[in-house]
Image (cartoon, rainbow, N blue to C red; front, side, top):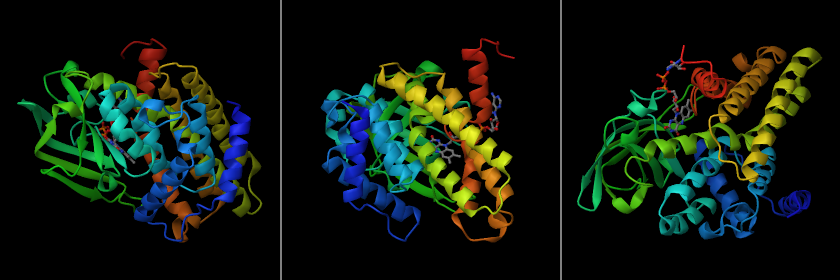
Length: 362
Ligand SMILES: Cc1cc2nc3c(=O)[nH]c(=O)nc-3n(C[C@H](O)[C@H](O)[C@H](O)COP(=O)(O)OP(=O)(O)OC[C@H]3O[C@@H](n4cnc5c(N)ncnc54)[C@H](O)[C@@H]3O)c2cc1C
C-alpha cells in the first residue's frame, strides 16, 4: 500500500463527504459526532485499514489508521480525546480477548456503534495502580465484581469497559475483564472537570456479575494487560492529537497581534520535537515492535508541548483566557491534565530513569 496515495485518496473522500460538526460543542454533541464520523469512515472502509481482518479490518500497516486519525482530527471533524479511545483500547482487546469475543465486538467499536472506556484508576490507586482494590470473586462460571473506579473517561457514553480488578494479592493478582456497563449493579456518575466538561466519571460496581468468557487473558494477567494498554495511551494515540495541536498553533498565529517570534518558535519546536518522536513510534509499531516503557518519552513530550503551546496562548493573547468566552480558556485548563492522564509526568520520569536509563530507584 502506497501511504502517500492512501492519504491523497482519503483527503479526496473527505473533501467529497461533508462530515463537518454542527454548532453544538457540548460533550454529548462531540460524542454523537464521533459516532457519525466513525460510522461513515467504517462504511466507506477507511476505518478498517490497519486493523486485523478477524475484527472487521482490512489489514495493512497500522500507519494507515494513524493517517486516518491525523486527517480526521486535523480537520476538526472529531475531537482528539474521544477519538483516541479506539486507538488505546482496541489493540489490547484484540491481543487478550477470546478470538470470538474480539471478532464479535471490536467491529462495533471501530464502526462507531459503541463507545468503550477504561476502568483502571480508583480513589486510592492512581500512580500506584497495582494497589487497586476493586475485587472480582469467582462464582460458578461467573465472576462477581465489587468496588469503585474513578476518572473513567466517557463512561456515561460507553457501552463497555475494560476493567482492571483484583483476584489475588500483588501484581500477579490483577485480572482484566470487558464488562457491559448496562449490567445490573453498575452506577455511573459524571464528574465535572475544571475546564467545565463532564469528561470523566466515578463508576460503582455492586455485586456485578461478569461471565468468565469476558476475561481478557487469564486470571492474573491484568498487570500485563495494563502494561500493554498504557503504552498506547502514552504514544500512538498522540499522532492525531498533534494534528489538532498544530491546527491550534495556526489559530494562535492568526489571532496574535505582533507576536513574540521567539515564544512562537519555542512552542513550535516543542510541537515539532513531539511530532518527530511520534513519527518514529508510529513506524516502530508498523514494523511490528511491541510498545513498552519507551513510550513514557512520548508522554513527557506530549505534555510538555501541549502545556507550552497553551502557556504561549496565555502570553500572546493577553486577557483572552481570563476574560473572553472562547475555546482557548477551556483548552488551556484541559492542557493541565496532560501531565496527569495516562500516568503523571513524575511517574513517566521515574519510568524513564529506572527502566530506560537504569539510574536505580532513588
Ligand atoms: C483528564 C483525565 C482523564 C483520565 N481518564 C482516565 C480513564 O479513562 N481511566 C482511568 O482509569 N483513569 C483515568 N484518569 C486517571 C489518571 O490515570 C490518574 O489521575 C493518574 O494515573 C494519577 O493518579 P491519581 O490521580 O490517583 O494521583 P496520585 O497517584 O495520587 O498522584 C498525586 C501526585 O503524587 C505524585 N506521585 C505519586 N506517586 C509518585 C511517585 N512514586 N514518585 C513521584 N511522584 C509521585 C503524582 O505524580 C501526582 O503529582 C484520567 C485522569 C485525567 C486527568
